[in-house]
Amino acid sequence: MRKILLFMIFTIGFVGVYDTVLTLLLSDYIIEFEQNLICKKIMETGGIPLFVQVKAASTLFVVLFLFYLIKTKYKNIVMPIFVFQCLLFYHLSFSANQSDRVLENNGTLPMPIAIFVQYYGLDTGCLDAFMKERFSYE
Image 1 (cartoon, rainbow, N blue to C red):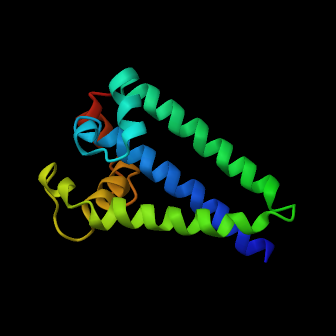
Image 2: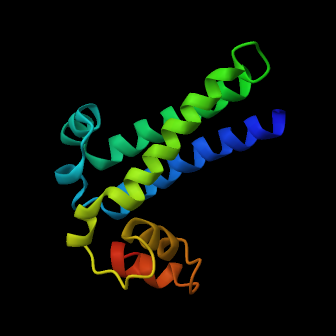
Image 3: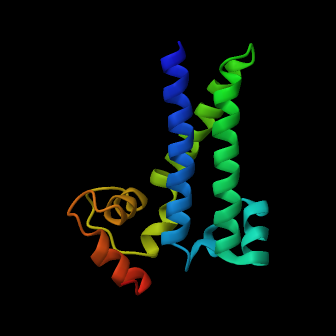
């Protein structure tokens, strides 16, 4: 049971990171497409950098708190959070059709997953080229 809980917590953290990376990569368009009113307000107030800081801190806090909770009688709270994050991953990856208007897709993967994979260079090892192209980074 403990390994299953650890896997769930890992997945919760991964979806948080996935969401944050998509926010960065689609930063030119994210305020227009953001559906969470609190997140939209943070972005309008402090921009994408503030939003990413808040998101990273809250994801880290939740993951660490869940690690603590699995040692207590409240470990069952991990399951609903895991289910919620899985639904969020589905929403971000497969039901957010508006992203197809933002970037062209070759059709092999849903657009957000393709962007994430390309960013980390998992398909062609093109992380440096992608970073230079997207962020004028050298």
